[in-house]
Amino acid sequence: MLYAFRTTIFFHFLSTILSVLLHLQSEILVVGANSLFTYLITKIMETKILKVVRQGEAFNVPSKTTESGVIQKCNIVLKELGSSKYENEYSCVMLGNLAGCKFAEGSIVVATLKFSTHENNGATYQDILATDLIKVNG
Image (cartoon, rainbow, N blue to C red; front, top):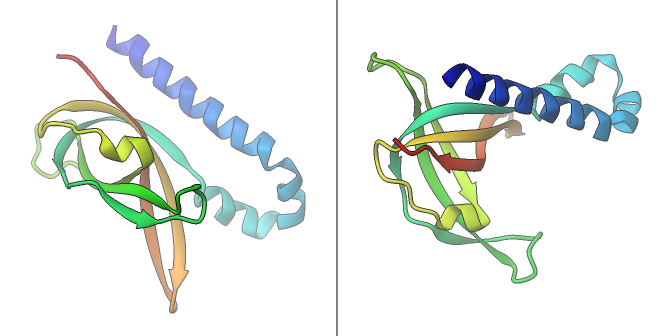
């Protein structure tokens, strides 16, 4: 059962990469080979099975993409499953309707994370956006 579940997640990941490549086909020709790698790295999405460590309260932030001019935002910390206290943790942002969802500490979720980077004043920052979170019963 778990094998089939992981296989489904893997194929979801592959389909996401293929759809991004097809969507960006015209941009790939313009971008060129050197910056193509950088561009694709900044658009990577990954689906993982994680545990909720903590979640903050949702709050409104200004948004240029919504009709109302504001969107809900919430921070959540997710940790990879494992017996070690040194498993990877991800400090993520949830936006919109997802930000209004509450996940209990210790809940197991299937999370699709979008990793992106941006530069500001010569420093590079990484952002992690949780685009989908599905609570796993158990």
